[in-house]
Length: 311
Image: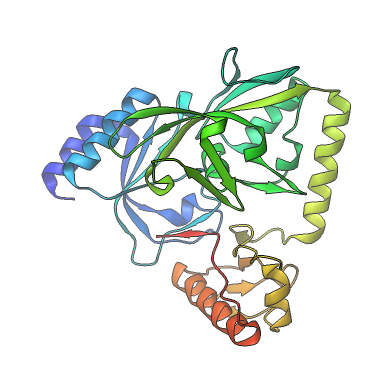
């Protein structure tokens, strides 16, 4: 950005924009290049104004959630990285939102709300259905965008409606019938999901027994901790599972557990985790990713696709 653009952005957001930010501090990988600007927005009107300004100014931008599924490359990001805060990270019960089935309770969560916060809020009100999210990091917007799930369940199956903002700053409300979910992907008719911000999501949940909800959460969390590395930086599962197989199995079959580049390592505990064992750089992680892809391809003929967003 030039000086005039920086002054305009500061006028628009004030102290909610920061400059030359290390994204290692905002990523669960604990690694990443620097962003030219990191902007926090707190409501729809401010978000609309920012997106319109970014488009009109020709300034590149990316939306991130809680930093759990991203890696900013070592060369950094020349533009604005946007985070949703305030009312855009809140959660509440609402009536008349979406087409709830009999006995379901509509709950609205902002795109910037952490999945942990959403789950805790629902558990505290004895609302069941999202227990499979226990231990999954990230934001509601990111989770919906990737159709996050575990144990045979996914977020798309509980959605009643979405409110989204396109790259022209226009708000759209989409009902469940207008949404198409597949493995780790959301498709929106007439909209590019990569250029859309998920502002709010409505889930249809059901009343349950709080003790049973807590027990299911604890069970899922314990099962997750048994299999996944702890105490190191990571972005969760690094590669998408190819059809009919598992990325972790393919990586392990290629003999790549423990393979390292700098302080980036294929986890000895779960082969589909690349972990930061100390001071790994974004370039270390990217180089290890490419090597894993090449060696798995040579071993199996399958080209693994990263689940992590790298930019």
